[in-house]
Image (tube, rainbow, N blue to C red; front, side):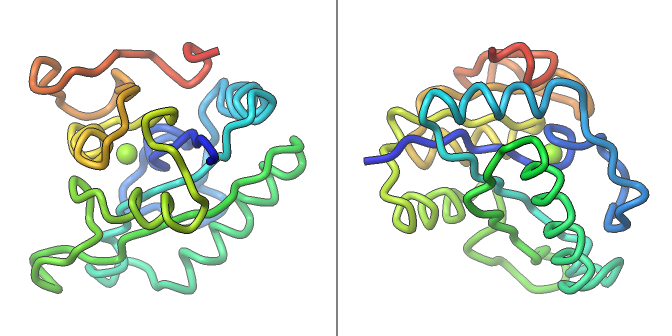
Length: 170
Ligand SMILES: [Mg+2]
């Protein structure tokens, strides 16, 4: 079986900006490439799981998202990092009703588990919202890290370790 480093995107890989979809607005956070190179060397697949409700809200299209994702993946490739897959949820309950994939639901993680034969107990998740961590815990990931910038967080709600950025994991 494989193990994976599951990363949220906005606020973990790139600086959080409202309804980000333009390449020019995408800013990598310090330490992301180093951390990914490190975990890749240790044998982890790198998988991104991201809620993209901006698609449901009509702020940007599925195609806009795909263009940004392809560009982002190439930036990782330039650093010899392979992103195995980017899973995204394009829904929002106000626009689509309840979906099965939006975090805190664990479906994107469980899909990745099936697609890549991943042992979740050996895997790691990093997010910047409670919903990321809740998805990880529900899926069965035991090592969940919450980046302590950005959103209001309820630390005691979950058994989770706090970090400042991905570099702290190295
Ligand atoms: Mg986030």
